[in-house]
Image 1 (cartoon, rainbow, N blue to C red):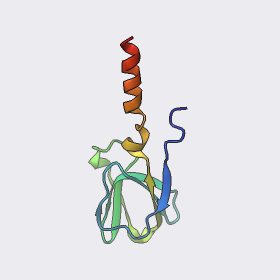
Image 2 (cartoon, one colour):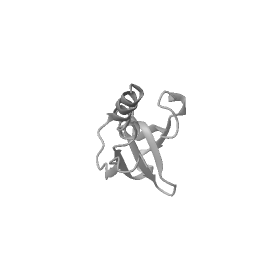
Image 3 (cartoon, helix red, strand yellow):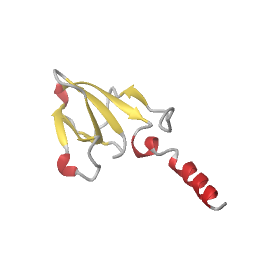
Image 4 (cartoon, rainbow, N blue to C red):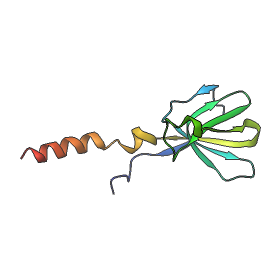
Length: 103
């Protein structure tokens, strides 16, 4: 399985700074009395947090949803996910395939 061992991990985001995370970075928000949600293109404001559900494309800004910060129990940041984490193997694989095609 190519995706195994790609180094995806989660860690608590205890005091997120105001502003936007890099668009490809993902977080899991744990709202009070609701199922967790996974977002990218996350923006933190003093009283709210918004993002695009991770299963939707980044350019879909009309897909952005938000929650009041008071309604969020905790936030975990995912590292190794998104384009960088999911495609870490693409460049070496491309080189190998190009070498094989040349023979």
